[in-house]
Length: 108
Image (cartoon, rainbow, N blue to C red; front, side):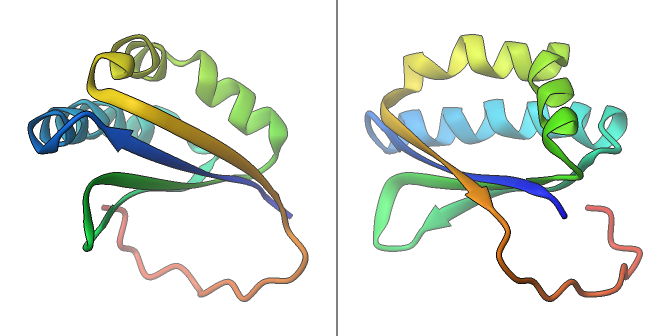
């Protein structure tokens, strides 16, 4: 099925986390418009850790992820994110089992 990953980002402080969120939101505009192979791309906040963000990303396949990485809006995100971050950790995922909900038309 898909190719996924989880990325845990820790910002320098809460102000940097807010700036990081704006950078991620800008990238998301391009992802929505230009990446049909990106199935899920979500920036999560962690309630007890205000400096932490967790991205969950799911792509049709590895090729779609590789195309995602080459998009100008993603390249901009990747080149700018370091100024806001203390650290980040990427975990790639292999699907073992799944439940996929039918499309609801919600293309936030």
